[in-house]
Amino acid sequence: MRYASPTTVAEAVDLLGSEPQARVYAGATDLIPQIRSGRPEPTVMVDLKHIARLCAIADSETSFTVGAAAPTADVCAHAGLVVAFPGLVEASSLIGSDQIQNRSSWGGNLANASPAADTPPSLVANHARVVIAGPGGERTVGVEEVAIGPGQTSMSPGEFIVEFELDRPPARTADAYLRMTPRTEMDIAVVGAAARVTLDAEGRVTEATITLGAVAPTVVRAADAETALVGNEPADDVLDRVEAAASAVADPIDDKRGTVAYRRKVAGVLARRAVVIAAQRAAEPQRGRGGQQ
Image (cartoon, rainbow, N blue to C red; front, top):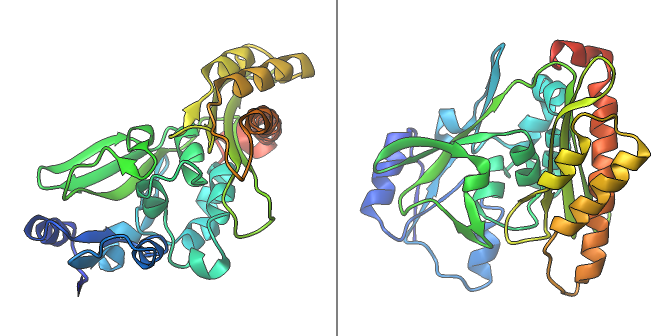
């Protein structure tokens, strides 16, 4: 097994094209444990951390661009992201320990395609896009199109994630993410729930996105729960419908971490709570400027 550290996207694409058994990695926080557990070793380990574009975080008046290999520690420390996407930053802060966060990344968390990954529900809720590079050039797709099953992605051989694109949210918009785990730290979600809402001047929801993680092979969008919210204030009767709809759309499995019935119940509870938090944030004064300070 060889090690390669390209400094450009084109160089990484060429390496992957010439070595069919090569694997890219950003932090190796998933790759190394997989190899140790007996999975086939790649012929070449391609380290993406030396490509400046993949480690950069940039923002403008209208959008953010986050490199696929940017450490989650940098994401959590970025003032613009903290204000614009507090829920997504919360989800990012839950990836491993402080030490792991200096290596882990959104790209790895998404490309590993774990149903219990913390950032994909929030990325989908915030309508994030990914730029994917490969032998055919670069293409941009929604985050929800990447993972197609546990450990499986829609990317073709030789492709890898370059960066994430996020539009700056409109005024009076905010998000939230919650998860349930048996332990308080260093655990994976039994259920995760992300919500993003936009409020009008009277406090009614004009737009809503609610997503669930760890309750299906991929991130689930709770469309009926969103419909229950739009046009209404997030009062108890509306939240009751949100909770029921989120529970109904969950399609989990029975395992040692929880039963189907338990996960469905928790999915509804967390979705409800995430909506409440997102709505409270959306009503904060700074949200009148689209989350800008």
